[in-house]
Length: 148
Image 1: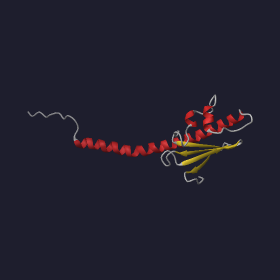
Image 2: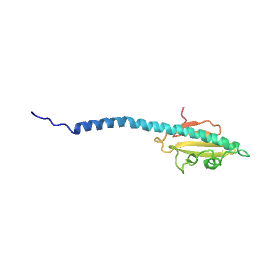
Image 3: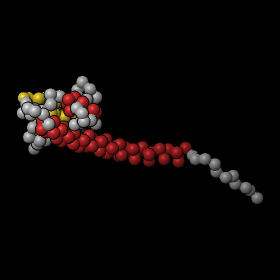
Image 4: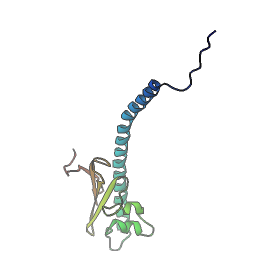
């Protein structure tokens, strides 16, 4: 009577099918993951601008005579700090916070502007956000045109 040998391991065709299935799943999942990260960066940027706006108002109300801070670093180095040091240092000269740089400018004692721009346009974000002393967050695309 003939005895058949037991099969051990996988054939080359089986391995190739598994690799093809994994590649297909990765091709579908990776763009969605990148888009989710992109959206999360933009949402974090909006939240950071709200934080900066609130911190500027709190700083202004604590000053005599009332004035907005000269820089974001002033908000981060105050005791107690109005914003965290990561946000205070997220300028073009520093390190981006969640894919965005923040440009703060004191216009005069009663006016400021803060702009959030993507560190790598199209990758970490596509929209530019802006807030001033009104507290209203506005949005434009990277070229500066308002988004309706």
